[in-house]
Image (cartoon, rainbow, N blue to C red; front, top):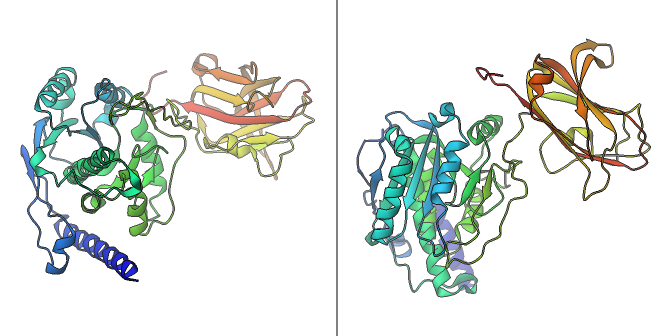
Length: 454
């Protein structure tokens, strides 16, 4: 009973702190970021009855490289890095962020790197490498490198051994929580949204544009965290107005559990009951060895794609019999689900994608089959130019053939050379009978954007 009351007290106290910080931030929201080489948080006033349960929060963060921009960006990309026993992936991660983004996207983005190791020589060496390779990004305000001295950190030894973790692992993950706490609070006034990455990540092409579309789709819904990767603390997106609360939360409970565990509690405390995760994943873990003792780390996100298709709005139909709930639109949705059609399948069958607006297509990719079975063996891929609307359906005509599926797959990376005009629909037309069922996992369409040359 005493243990139960203690837990209730701690939960109530945590909620009280989150509420106080939220009210504080609402009052201060109209403030502007001062251009400074040191970011200081003042000590806050604490109620006497909870002072003993929570650590004071007073830290000075130094800006080692980069310049502040006067205007807020759309997105801050935050990552923390420490020295690894077996090599570093930090520069590869930064290179992936910048190479995956257009200059227009980079104008709406700032990357913040927290060099979180306490080894001064490592910090100096890493800073020199970053400065040499990314000096243009630093000068444009698209990259900030920061550091917090060791004396800013709470105790990192003699901590609770929750989950029966070894003491050195507890110290490592507890420090990581504080690292992230400092990182997200520093980033709270730099942009509208924030995405957390790790220092061993590769990015999908034009990830910012993909994220923007998904965020816009949530404009009429309340949310705290959006997930663009299923791995750990990679690809988690927040509204920057929530970052000070998140920073305090990670700091107050830094020794309780790993950061990804804490995050599942955070969005629930702020009344987002369910995980909101988008597919395909936009970020992939590239590292082979962990930052903790250089242990082997083979984690991969199988939902990651290097280039997310545009798949413009369309109506998808088929005259192939559908198996249960595996409808044809699932092949176009870019999720984990797929279309599953029942045999017999023959030359009279097709899958039709009718675009809501005419589109100029640059690339088409179609993936069929599952585990080496149920491939669509005989089919042509065609683009139609004209729509004829009838009472109960829409017919497409004026087809040009792009090519045929080979071993159940199709990929045409230069559609504009074959069909250099806008089209109204895409058709997958079966050309011969096949006895087996068919699985269509992906129908992917890339289009030319405004201002993009053919």
